[in-house]
Image 1 (cartoon, rainbow, N blue to C red):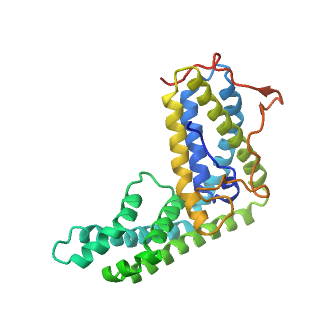
Image 2 (cartoon, helix red, strand yellow):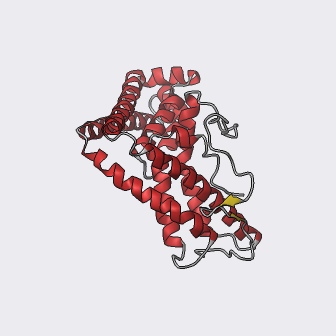
Image 3 (cartoon, rainbow, N blue to C red):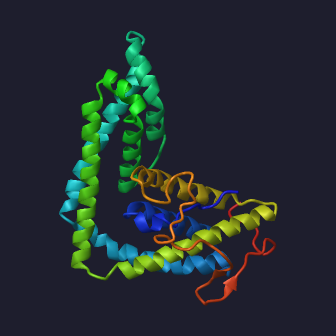
Length: 286
């Protein structure tokens, strides 16, 4: 059954866009879906999440005024140009009927291009993850001859360098902002992480309830898919760097770094346990 899956370890590693994008998605999509006046369990967990997330959004807005923002935007444009040029070379040569060697090399690399091209909206750090995954796939040892045949080595090195520059500048911007606003964000981020965990688990349980009720909620299912699509490339990117608990075969749990998984009735803000009853929670958004 579909669920918002295995995000706990990511709450501790995300900087900051993937988690923010998922928060924004849950805030807007669930906010539009939930009847504001209706006392549902999803509302119970959505309300504190929404309140804290909006507080964080207000705190974070001034970061965009940083002098590093134009630098980030420039490096972002340059890295996209470089990766798109690599993709164009591979795509063009995959149809090259005059040079069989180049066509064969390009066809070996084209799946990585399709994976990179086949995504829609990307956050800034989301782009970093997608490009890191693309470069990782293309530069695997089994593709060394293909890269050499197409003459892509220098471009891949530059793309990787630009991607790392972007990540370094992004971290520098965040660290400078945090140094100027000590203690203003960390406690709130901890609250939002727990709020996100509770809301995600409640969303999963709500979807399960609609399935058991015989009317799976297409609207909730779509939200689950979108959240997972945001986290997936970042998880791959962390796995490539050897971060524990992020490989596709793992359960993504690291007792030292992650929030606890659901192991009983969810605790609402009032401290009372809540259990979803399929008969009380019909599908929403149908």
